[in-house]
Amino acid sequence: MNELLNLSVAKLKRMATLKSKIERLQSQLEALAANAGASRTSAKGGRKRRKMSAAARRKISLAAKARWAKVRAAKAK
Image (cartoon, rainbow, N blue to C red):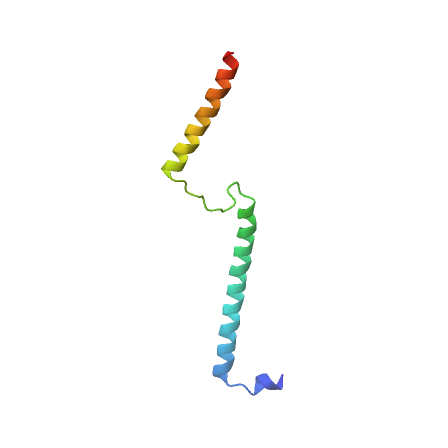
């Protein structure tokens, strides 16, 4: 307690300002943590989508069509 009495008014004001900033930042941090927990349960999950090239999509499409053609040919027999 004596230590606080020996501080200057300017230092006390500075300490009060810093304390209020810390409290504000803590409340913002808590709000972000609450939002982060809610976004994890969302459908997308916050993941980035991987982009597939047009050539890769075409290869997959052709392979799927070939598989289905094979299935249909087996059914026809």
